[in-house]
Length: 201
Image (tube, rainbow, N blue to C red; front, side):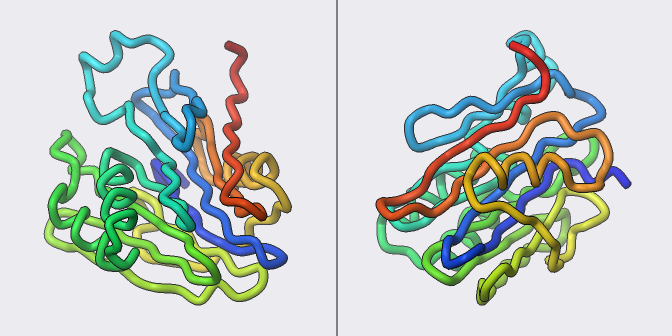
């Protein structure tokens, strides 16, 4: 099954985390790069941006005690709203309302997730619909939303005890055309970031 981009939120052994995976038919030549407190997804060939401006963005951004994950620039707005004191649920709802779905040929939905403490949130903006929901991330719980097919918020099994393991687990989900993945895993003093790029640089 091809589901496009994937956002996952979860908690393992008292540590909350977010995961992200790029799955792509049209632009598979992409990678994740850690830049400070963000993970940037971008094409290996910058000329691809001339064909589609939506393929480069921060997919993960840290915001104090929260980690934000999304398939577009809404990640930045959500993080900034949380830093300003907005609740994660309201930050997701506001940002997805402001941006809406992507105006590409597929009307690609925007998806987003946040974890903070033992709570998690997911959101999606589709053509004609915007939804956001809060989750109790009890031990080893994880939830997923994707741009196509898996557009409902559903429980999923993702195992890992570090940022590297979660990134690889997100990449390894049994869904078609994986390209690269990333994660943020809660640590004693914030979050640790990781990327998984299977193609050599």
